[in-house]
Image (tube, rainbow, N blue to C red; front, side, top):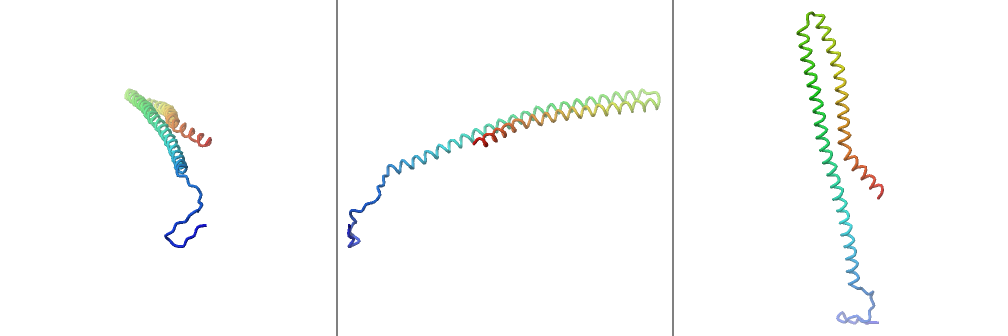
Length: 153
């Protein structure tokens, strides 16, 4: 055993666990490499998911524009049709010979307009329902895919 008479003397024959700096460096490097690889994978997944979401949103906006145009054209057609029917009815009223004929024309016109308005409303409702389904489909598909991947993981 070693003696320690003074603080200036050194200790001899002391055994300590062997520390190999090269192995520690390798272990640190392995941990860092693993962290870098996991970061790359996470970034790649995030980038892929962001790209998928961007495509879905772009598709949704294109659908919204297309369906919006379709609904607008249907509304314009309905307004034009109603305006033409109104002018035709006005011409018929002006040409009427008696008050009873005016009342008869007015009743027939109102009945026809109510039926036409109901059909136009059904047509617009169907177009709007189809538009909402078309617009939500890309986002819905992406969401369902993400849920499936989440459940699989």
